Image (cartoon, rainbow, N blue to C red; front, side):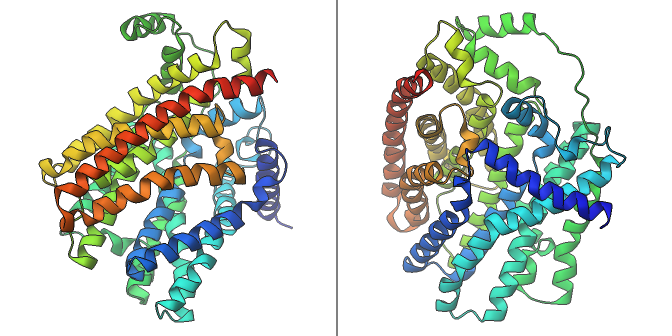
Length: 469
């Protein structure tokens, strides 16, 4: 057995055991079944509402590309998250100094491991769930097989692009700004068919040229990521007492909990740039979906409601970052309630996520009517408050458990869907129903924010009882 094969096999086993440790036993093993059921329900609902299967496929490629980008952020937050979740441990991907293996080789094997692991655990259930809807739409079995291939390719493109950007950031943060700007411009510029350079192009118009052109970026980024990435040294511990005092005074943060959360994010790998990055990905995906819907149906959905909804939902990643650097147990040693901790975390979360979302709404004004984007100014912060309340109530200060803890994942997904689906429908029907649909969307977001505040207030006593019990 070659060294590369042995590393690949051991990394797969390590990933499984890591999830067992993080998510409490083997409950996460039911996660693929949950994904399949939810996906099948979503496909059936979209088909029932008359959504063309080609539009469903386009959106699915976009979502899996986004998921790949999130998985690929190991380069931005991997070490920080693992250190806080597991303590002082070293995974195989970080063992170049203790094993006679180059860092580039380890990271390349790690990439393949992620592609195989998440394809089997996440993408395959989605592909299987799409079969009934595809057959009902008259799609041939051979084309369904092609769909599975291009979905894997979309995920791989996200993973490799994310790791390449992270690799560029380890050399110079400014190296990230230009390529991100070019990618966003290519996605939004009307005269450039950016999709022709993605795996989706092969499904859209099957041909050898489409295959080569669509999968070449995956291969290029798959090489550039491991080559560019430089592992960060642990370094010495740093203090920032002056920054803490200054920021705490500016925020009037008497307990210092909000200041602590903000400084932890800013001093972690990727700093606050990772908030802008994750929001930028959602912004690009939303713009792409809006363009596809317009091209397929001729309708002009409300961009303000659409951007506000998806950027608000994407603020969940910011919640993960403001809670990943501390443990709920440590607050039991301090004269502070868990409810106070949640209130401080919400403030830090809103200070990071809402301005980032508003920046992208301002950028959208380059392509969309600024007046049509105004509803997003209300929907974005209101939905962000709701997302925080739901996440705090369901997951507490351990939001990563949502990923593979099936019961929590289902509860969290249902809570978001109850609000997100009506908001997106309101965005789609706005051309037919006029301003009334937009007003209803803003009203629903306001009600959701009130519910989010109530859930956050209940989350404090709920998790304090569990911690002390």
